[in-house]
Image (cartoon, rainbow, N blue to C red; front, side, top):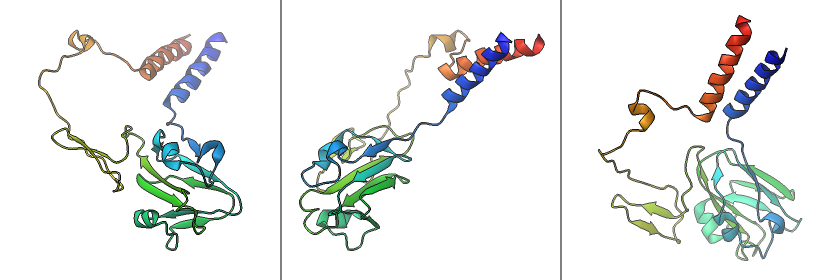
Length: 194
């Protein structure tokens, strides 16, 4: 009976390790919410948003949330908004990579700082500061005036790679998931044979 219990624990552990990365819900402006007087550029600067994450805008009845294009973001216009909400609690599911722009559509509020631009990366992308581009020469350029929609990195290769000791000795290394899987598979095999 104890072996059966350990098999269940093994399968639960495998399921936990194999689960997809969890999405993250970010409250825009944290405790400041979606309001005048909050620095959304600073708020977004340390966030790594990925497809599947969500933004939650909490605000009073005198505000709104509009997703807009880059040009409408730069001119603080919400007249051609992609989406608009005035509910006071807006959740935006981030479904696509690239830049996403949000403004308060109440006249004067966007100009007063109620605007947010975020870069959404794919699930396998690594964090790169927005507005940064690495050129083939390896130089890094930043243009704060122009919204960046992609980051280009030219990889370099070398022919002097050193093999890992386990691979040169004919062995192999397992990821933590692989090691747990092998151990659990062995335990299950023993359970079946007994």
